[in-house]
Length: 274
Image 1 (cartoon, one colour):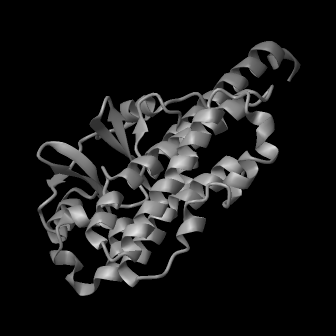
Image 2 (spheres, rainbow, N blue to C red; image 1 turned 30 degrees about the vertical axis):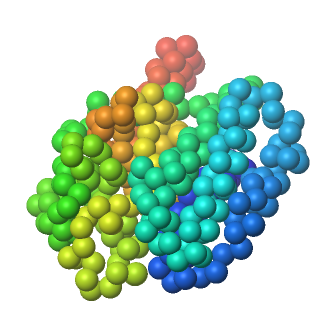
Image 3 (spheres, one colour; image 1 turned 180 degrees about the horizontal axis):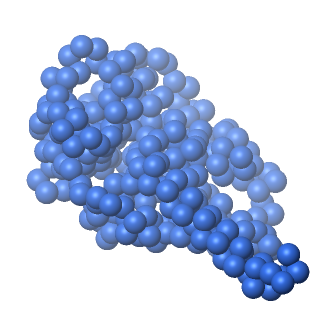
């Protein structure tokens, strides 16, 4: 893994760490949480990473990283002051921490892409998320209102054999409910988790992607954040949910096309000699 992939994985884990802090009251070193120089990415940015400051996305990534740590420190500050409601609001899908986390992960992906594009001769998969959606046999979006129970959400998933459904509130997309996300919350909620509103069980590791994001970016996000589903957004509207299986199918299809083209080229040019 490169520094960007490592950073995506480490910073994506922060949300669950902060939720654990809220539930268990683990004391956080707020000064360290808010220090954007303290983590591996911060040390790299102000060390070896300086040589990459020519990349178009480097400065925006640095700013997103600084804001992320300030937002994380604010969550810890309110939690330590026993203002749990305020701390939880910052962790909701439209809260400041969640928004800053999403922006940072996007910025890291862009910086990683710029770095790869700057390397001569690097072979990259140019297929995009919109190609994945086109290839899906069934692109139905199953959803549930935020006030519905977790049990209702699970029933929908079982009935339609899907691993994730969208959560809406007053027509607005809040996030997605997934099998893995539910299990993470179950650790803290116990047997009463099935009765909780599904809005409280949004998968904390999920980051959305755009139609023009690459298949490669999806693979990086899924492998580094250990998620199996990605919401696809178009101008603020949810247009699909792709799974790790959808991404793998696209990669295999793309590789098969390349092999077929190479095979055709070899036979056309060298066929008589083979």
